[in-house]
Each structure stands twice: as structure tokens, then as C-alpha cells.
Length: 437
Ligand SMILES: NC(=O)c1ccc[n+]([C@@H]2O[C@H](COP(=O)([O-])OP(=O)(O)OC[C@H]3O[C@@H](n4cnc5c(N)ncnc54)[C@H](O)[C@@H]3O)[C@@H](O)[C@H]2O)c1
Image 1 (cartoon, rainbow, N blue to C red):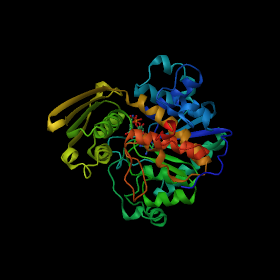
Image 2 (tube, rainbow, N blue to C red; image 1 turned 90 degrees about the vertical axis):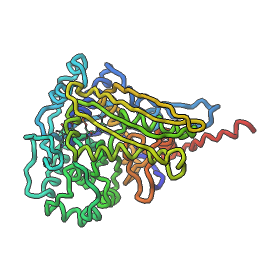
Image 3 (cartoon, helix red, strand yellow; image 1 turned 135 degrees about the vertical axis):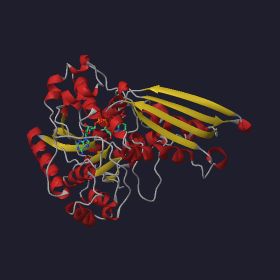
Image 4 (tube, rainbow, N blue to C red; image 1 turned 60 degrees about the horizontal axis):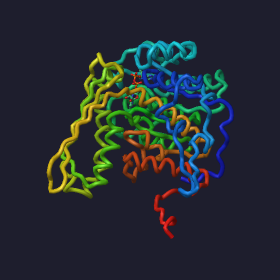
């Protein structure tokens, strides 16, 4: 990655497009509007609430990130999206049951004005959904062209100068790399031949990239994490990021497990189970979609604990993840973790975590930060995988020869150092030897 020479200023409106206007997307949109009306705080958002230390500890320079680097202003954001259901953002937010009437009533007019465009959808990829607001097209390539038209029309109507797309659609069935994902040529041919290895989410990613729009993936689907789309992103100078927003149980896992490793505490097993009753839970009730999520959730421990380096501590871990669809809970998930650890001389201990969390409340600030940072990356001329945004993902995308970095604290350091690097500030190594000369 070459250091940016200049960062273009964030002039004019920034259009945010979300394929999928369900719980996460509408909680994000409603939240941004409430914050700009001064009725709520953007809690959980690093771009809005976080600070960054610059220079030496003795200098006392720790501005808010949003005051340090030129990010788009919330006031300049405009929204659009696609969904397989025709509900506008107010109806969708009401049905998903995340925000209470005291919040939704205030932003009803704003949300009602955001109507979903017709989706590129195929039930083979999300078995438990059936919708009516769906595009028709002879081939997958036609559908991608229609999405590109939607992008153009949205940009014109909204007056947005720049756009960012964040996939907030359902989790698609599990897929691995196929030969048709290898190059742009093969990928385009496969779209024209309606090849089954081209999932709907890939059509949005293709449309975004070829329209010069940065693309982030909030679900665990393969989507843009294939050589063909990586190649295309480099060609079109478009930043990419993904996959799968890191919220809830996995967020805690990547907070706790680096702590165990730091203190050389052993781990025998980690059993995670969830009850979840929203539409996401219903989609994940299908084994194909669950497999995609499971793979994404299982990876983190191996990468953080590095059993090949510490076979005595982490060589025999039983790691299990379960998600149970349980409608009474709606979006208010409950995640239980039983963690079997061991200490000095091998004596066993247990930790139990019971996290009564709100999925979309944790995900919404991630969408906001990704929108602002992806727009920043684009204005700075960065293209391809933005590994510094791993902080936000369960399955961070990275170069093929690398392993992904999952440790939340390393991810945060990487993110902040990237901001320093982009602006010519000194990188912070935390060595601190200079204070003791
Ligand atoms: N909430 C979290 O904490 C969290 C964390 C990590 C990942 N995610 C992922 O984010 C995504 C959104 O989560 P959610 O809770 O908002 O789910 P949701 O079910 O409320 O919303 C997803 C929406 O996407 C729509 N959709 C599905 N396929 C589509 C397509 N091809 N085109 C357009 N729209 C399509 C669905 O109709 C639905 O309205 C899911 O994939 C979920 O797994 C959520």
C-alpha cells in the first residue's frame, strides 16, 4: 500500500447504500438521524467518540479522531438501499423491533422517505426468505447492470458527490472459492451464464466496484473476497473491506482470548451458544447460511491463540458455536459462553459469560465507522483490501499470503497507526524508552 500523497477533502454529500434494509441497516440510519438532531449520542462509534494520541505522551495531544482527520460529517450523509421486502425504512425498523417508539417516532418522516430499491435476490442463496420486491433479469450480468443503474439514479436524485456501499443483507449459504472466481474474465462470463457460484451479494459488489464505489461486507458471505473482485477493485481504485461485523459473542472472544494468551493461561474448551429471534436468526436457522456464519465465528480462536506456537496451552481446544432461532427474544440475543481454562501446574478453572446483548445496537456504529473510513480511504487513493479495518470484522479480509489479525487490541493499534501514517504523524510503538534517558 503506497502512502497517500494527499487526501481529497470530503466536499458535498456522501451517499450510503445498503443492500439489505433490515435491523442493522435501519438502526444505523435512524441512529445517525437522531445524533444529528442532537437527541442521542453515537455510542460505540470510534470515529465519533474515539480519540487518537499524537506525538509523545508528554505532549498531551489526543484529539477526537473526527477532529484529527477529514471525515465526512453526519449532516452530509444521505441514504438508500435495496431489499426483497418493499417496506420503507420506518416500517422495516418498526418490524425489526430494535428501537423503541420514543426514538422511532422522532425520525418517522426521515425513515419513511427511504424506500428500498428492488433487490437482486435468489432464494437458493437465502433459503428462509421469500420476498416480492425483486428484480427480473435474464442473466446475473443483467441484474448487476440494473444495480449499476440504481446507483446512478440514486446518486443523481440525492445529489451525493461520493458513495459507499455496505452489505447489510442476509447471510447467504456457504460457498468456497470456485474456478469462476479466479479472474474478472471468468467471473463476467459466469455472470452471463447464470453460474451457480455467483451469489446475489457478488452482483452488488461487482456493481459497486465497477461504479467506483467502495464496498464493505457486513455478513460472512464470500462476496468480494475472491480474486476476480480483488483484481477489479485494484483496476477501479476502489477500497474493499469485510467480512462479518464483529459484534456480541465474537467481540468478547477477541477481547478475552488475547488476555489469556498474554498471561500464558491454557484453554481446553470454549462452548458458545446463542438464542436469537430476529430475521437474521431465522435466516441462520437454515444449515447452509449457518455454516457460513459458523466458519466465520470458529476461525478467531485459532488465529489468536496460535496452537502451533503453544501446543501445551492451546493444542487441544474444543471450540463449539451454536445459534438457536428463538422468536420471543427478537433482536435481544442472549449469548452464553462456557470457557474451560487452566493455570499453574495445569489446575482447571472455568469462566461463564452470559451476554444479554442487542445485536443491531452493537452493529450500527460499526456501519457508521466503516462508511466514514471507507470514504476516507477512497479520498486518500487507497485501493483493494483495507486490512486496517479488520477491527470491525469477525473474518477480516487480508492478502492471500497472510493470516488475518483477530486480536482486537492489535487491530485497534493498526487502525490508529494507519490514520497517523496517512497524515504523516509519527507512528506509536509504545516503546517509550525516550522518557528514561
Ligand atoms: N446484528 C449483528 O450484530 C450482526 C453481526 C454480524 C453480522 N451481521 C450480519 O448483518 C446482516 C444483516 O443483519 P440484520 O440483523 O440486519 O438482518 P435482517 O434479516 O434484519 O436484515 C437483512 C435484510 O437483508 C435483506 N436481503 C436478503 N438478501 C438480499 C438481497 N439479495 N438483496 C437485498 N436485500 C436482501 C432481507 O430481506 C432483510 O431485510 C446479516 O447477514 C447478519 O448476519 C449482523
